[in-house]
Image (tube, rainbow, N blue to C red; front, side, top):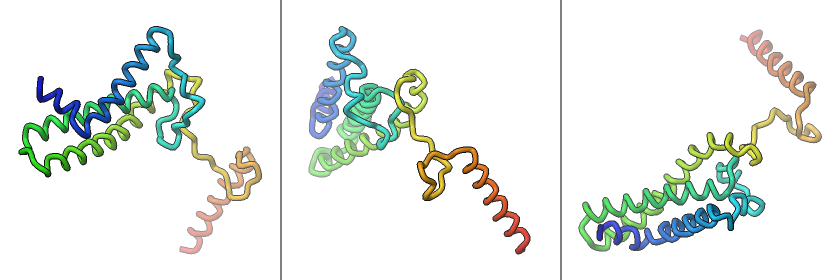
Length: 162
């Protein structure tokens, strides 16, 4: 138990531990009705981070829990298998940063199917079939037919050239 506490509160794992404490406090306040689950949605747009479609609090909570779990797990493995020294501290720092990156990638995968539970949230942007300089940028039926015709004409001309 002492090894776990040292791993969870030692540097640099104390950063995800502090974030986890904030997340737990937020969800306790939310359970008591003091905080709203959508409290931060107007302030943050998670589309750039590929975590849109769910409330910000849900996405960041999943990210925090995963980052903390991976970081503490890596710190425990380092404490058990790596002898103490300067390499130990550097390895803990790299493991914490790696845990954050793995947690982000995993959160992106977890959040994507959860967007069905939150229909009011904007989802991931859908790539459009717009052409360069197409006015409003919103394709209509004529634009799509022209694109299909142009691509089939290009295929036919390529086939005749060979």
